[in-house]
Image 1 (cartoon, rainbow, N blue to C red):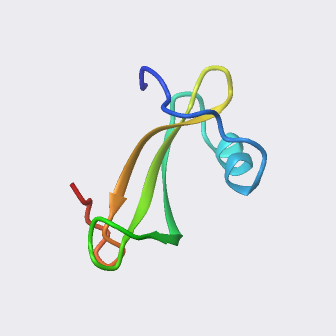
Image 2 (cartoon, rainbow, N blue to C red):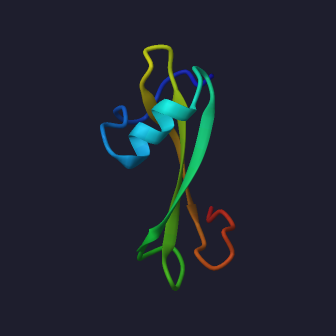
Amino acid sequence: MADSPFGGPLGSGALGDLLRRELKIGEQASVLDTDHVHPGYIPGGHIDAVLYQKFPDGRVYPIDKSHLNPNTLEEIK
C-alpha cells in the first residue's frame, strides 16, 4: 500500500463511483485518459495514466501518474 496519495480523493462521478464500488481496501487500478491528449514532451503530445488506490477510509486517491506516448502507450521519461 502506498504511503500517501499525491492528490485529493476522487469525488462523485462515473470514475470515482466505479472505483469506490469495485476496489477493495488496498487494491489499485490504473486509468488511461485517452480522451485528452496533452501537448508537450513529444510531437503528438502525451496521455496521462493515473494509478489510484482505495485507502482504509474508503476513499480512492491518486498515488502515481505517468505520461504515455498516445501512439505506443510507452512511458515518456
